[in-house]
Image (cartoon, rainbow, N blue to C red):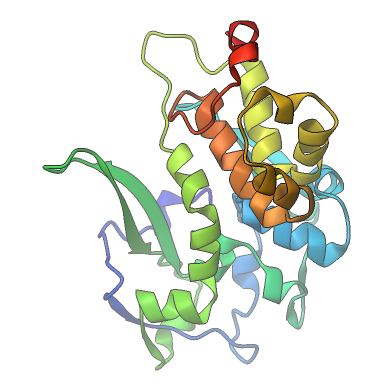
Length: 262
């Protein structure tokens, strides 16, 4: 979510942090949080929503998203478009609630919790650390309800734990930053980063309608699996992104192609 930082409580929370919250259709602010907001989407968000709607990832991106490019990393992100009306509603919200509730995005599942990922130094070297914070929108009455949670029980109840597991490697890639004084990420890599992250159907075509599989030493079983399994293809895409962004040598080029690839 591209947050209004004035709503962020500036205290880092843990999975054990407690809070009281409940959202339901009898509360006067019901679905108000689904307007005038910028939901940054993850790869698994796109996969779930485009399948729910029965359309391709390319169609979904064209109809329901716009692109935001981060200044510090040059990474392009897909952001959910709101309706062109006075309220700026989410295209999937109705008076009865979310029409794709079972397949709603990660950020919607977490609300009123925000989640972040940072690199922390340790004796064993850099480690990735998740942290959490509360979003205190003064118009949200959910905090006045009596139902008590910990952040951990909330994320499990809302299914955010599954989404986190699916997106974990991708989120780690997003920690990459442009090197000060050096050129930013070039347009070709930006385009590849966007396609692999969000356009799973386009990435499948790129993978199997070109010489791509023959360039790398990829296990035959993995190749067969990514032909039909979207989640396996998505996770393979994360390995490919780490490779092209030179974050990790996750793939090995076949000897006969090494000079050509270089």
